[in-house]
Length: 85
Image (cartoon, rainbow, N blue to C red; front, side, top):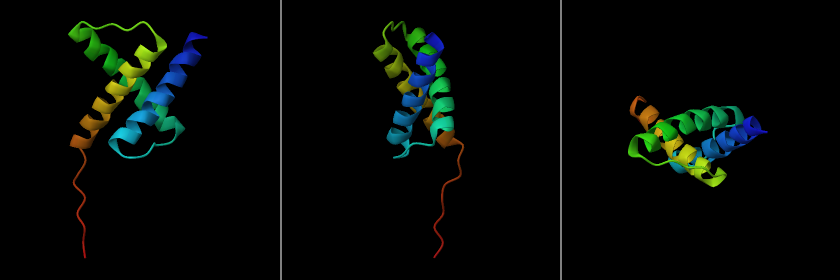
């Protein structure tokens, strides 16, 4: 049952991070990938700062924060959009 919770938390975290950073989700597969990477990154960041979560809500918060940081890092590598008349 644990892996199902990780997948669900990853999907929800990726969706929430997509809403925060871009204003919309990316689709279920990309949300899952962003959420999983965000969970790992958030866990590393929180562990580095000395914080540890044990509940599902704490894991979701950690994953969302990590996913937002991940999307922000990705946005640094995108070229700026240029509007042409």
